[in-house]
Structure formats: structure tokens, C-alpha cells
Length: 134
Ligand code: SF4
Image (tube, rainbow, N blue to C red; front, side):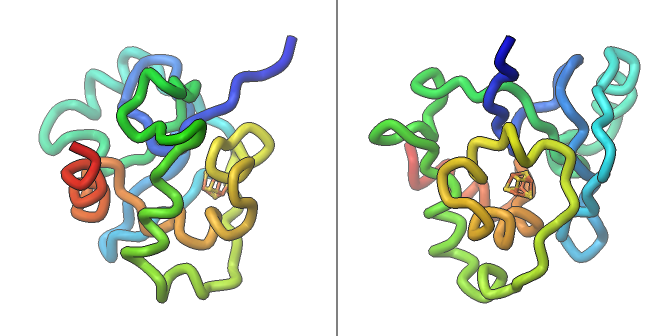
């Protein structure tokens, strides 16, 4: 069975891939190995600040069930790149656990991986993107 395409900036949920942890400087420390969030993990992570501000999760892409889906693709990578042009110049690609299944990578390849470390799911950049999408 073909594995689903994953959104790399998904809500915290049981069964989601824990993609990485938000560092103090706002960048993402990726987990090189695939770890799946358990119910217990999510419950504990919900104590305190929103888990989406402290971790990045990946879950199956909902395509047109998501407000970020525009003209047959995810609108997030291109908008993040507009907001973070300097980060996009970094040639270092993170060692992430979902690349073959990643929606952003499938759309724009390594370009997405260069901006990905600066995306916090409920952080300021995504808030900006979300408000632009509303
Ligand atoms: S954009 Fe690149 S680094 Fe980010 S989750 Fe997708 S494959 Fe991994």
C-alpha cells in the first residue's frame, strides 16, 4: 500500500509523526528517526504552551480539506519563502524522517527543506500565513 503524503506542519495528534522540537532560537531540531506521538505524549504535551509551538508534527495531508490548499497544492512553502528569504539561502538540508512522503518536498524539493527549519506551526510566521489565508 502506498504511504500517504504527509503535511510537515500538522496539529499535535495521536499517531502523528513527531518531526522535531522547537529550539530556543525558534529553529527546529529534527528527529532523524521516525517517532510516532502516543496519546500519552499528546496529553502531556498539551500541558502548558500549545504543543504546536514547541514541536513540529507531520500527519497525512488533507489537500482541499485544509485552508492552506490553493490551486491544487499546499500554499505554505511559497509563502514562507516570501517571508523568510534569508533562511531560504541556507544550503544545509535537515536530516528529517519523512522526506520521501513530505508534501512540501514533493512540491519544491530542497527549496522547501531550506525554509522548513524556520517554521513553527503556531508561531509568528504561520500566524501571518494563516491570517493572510483568511
Ligand atoms: S520540507 Fe524537507 S525538511 Fe521539512 S519536513 Fe519536508 S522533507 Fe523534511
